[in-house]
Amino acid sequence: EPEVTQTPSHQVTQMGQEVILRCVPISNHLYFYWYRQILGQKVEFLVSFYNNEISEKSEIFDDQFSVERPDGSNFTLKIRSTKLEDSAMYFCASRTFGKYEQYFGPGTRLTVT
Amino acid sequence: KQEVTQIPAALSVPEGENLVLNCSFTDSAIYNLQWFRQDPGKGLTSLLLIQSSQREQTSGRLNASLDKSSGRSTLYIAASQPGDSATYLCAVIISSGSARQLTFGSGTQLTVLP
Image (cartoon, rainbow over all chains, first blue to last red; front, side):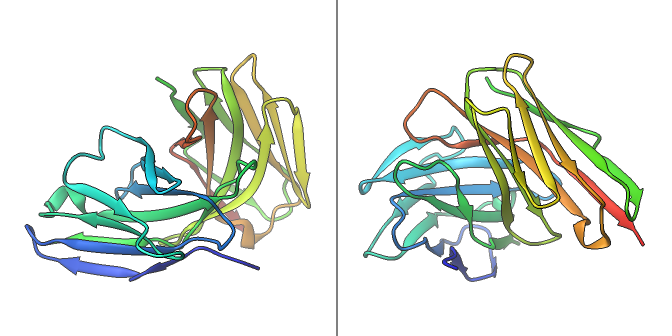
């Protein structure tokens, strides 16, 4: 069964460094999402991406963040100048056109020290 | 702003018991509602999706209901098993906006005791 994959599973970085989190959505899906979950808190929406552009973003998704679909398979989240409070589990999700069930990847645990 | 609440935050039951998990949302203008399972340190597994026009959905031992007017959904788990132990999350998609992003509750942590 097709699934969303994410790499790396765990990333440790120092404060102020840039990180890129990678996702490979399900191949025929057209809508892509990033969510994050700070330890012990709710899963929060960050950004959605469709037709090679951001379709919606939350107030969390400020200039520190960017997303890109560099080729036909990968979907990336870049965090510039990481802060301690960026430590969280980051989930990628995707869905197909006309259906609203979102499929999530296993997540990347980001630890900023 | 849509708020999603799940009660109880934690639930412990003996194996074999039937149980109900509750989810409530403040804005009834939802497009659909999705239930997920999350195992510790892992991703989210979609269990059921109910469209706003539906009243319930079933998958195996799971049955989810939706009452839009009262802003409530329940997830019924029949004949619970230790393997059902996990955190169960509900999430709604609001009707406005093309992105159809999910707004999540904080989850119910279920423990099924052997």
